[in-house]
Image 1 (cartoon, one colour):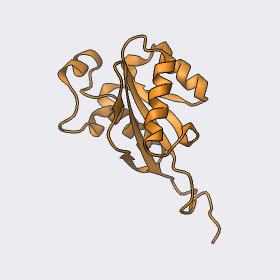
Image 2: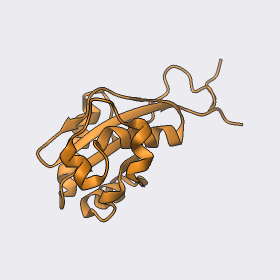
Image 3: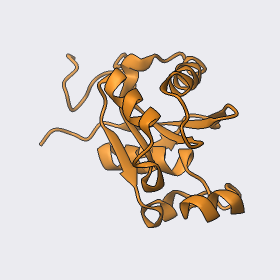
Length: 146
């Protein structure tokens, strides 16, 4: 049986999105290094990425926009209230909530974008972090072509 867009077959490359959180003025190079490291932990590369996401509070963050441009990917921003469904009961912090309006950023942004793009969204392990940024990866099943 030949793979098709609606049934890509077992060897189809996984489609992955990255949810990103960062401190103010985090350089694009720091975000890219964290993203590549996060992907490598799952034997993935930037070629598997189909989108990036962050919280609306970071809409004016130059490093995020530079990263999206560098990777030629769409960058989606979610308001805190849109992330409520994707928050873990035990995740997040009061400090992050006070700054962004959401107790966590990377994981719920990754899940929100993966849900928007497909079905059966799920995180790929724990988020990774540096002193300046966090990254969570999510994958999803492709929607059948109508």
